Image (cartoon, rainbow, N blue to C red; front, side, top):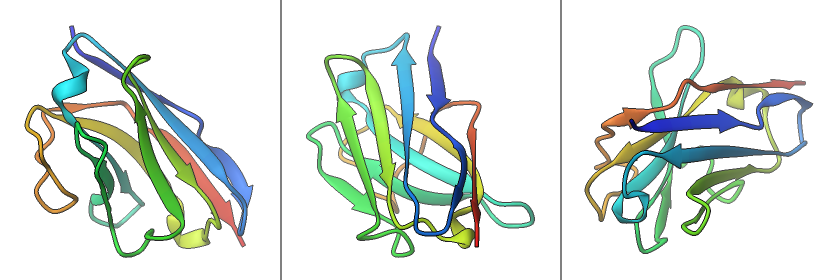
Amino acid sequence: QVQLVESGGGSVQAGGSLRLSCAASGYTWRYYSMGWFRQAPGKEHEGVAVIEDNARATYADSVKDRFAISRDNAKNILYLQMNNLKPEDTAMYYCAADSWSPRTITTIRPIYWGQGTQVTVSS
C-alpha cells in the first residue's frame, strides 16, 4: 500500500522559514519523480517543485531562489526547504509521486498524493 505522509507545516511570519517532509512507503521510490504542490483557498492547484530520480530539480517561478526540494533515497523522505516565506505562500502543501522520470514542474503527472500539511504565513 502506497503512503505519502507530509509533516512540518505550521504558522510563521513573513520572512521566516519552514521545512516540509514527506515520508514515502509502499513503492520503489528511488525511480519516481517526486513533487510538492499547493492549493490556497479559492485558487487552483499549483506545482511548486519537482525532483527527478537523479536529483535534478525544477521550480515554479514564484518560489525559485526561495524554496529548495531534496530527497533522501536511503530514508525515502522528500523535503521542501522554504525560506523567505511570503503571505502568498499560504496554502495546503501536498507531496506527490509520479512513476516516470525524468519529469519537470510542467510535465509531472502524479499518481500518488499525500493528505497535505498546512502552511500559513502572516504579514
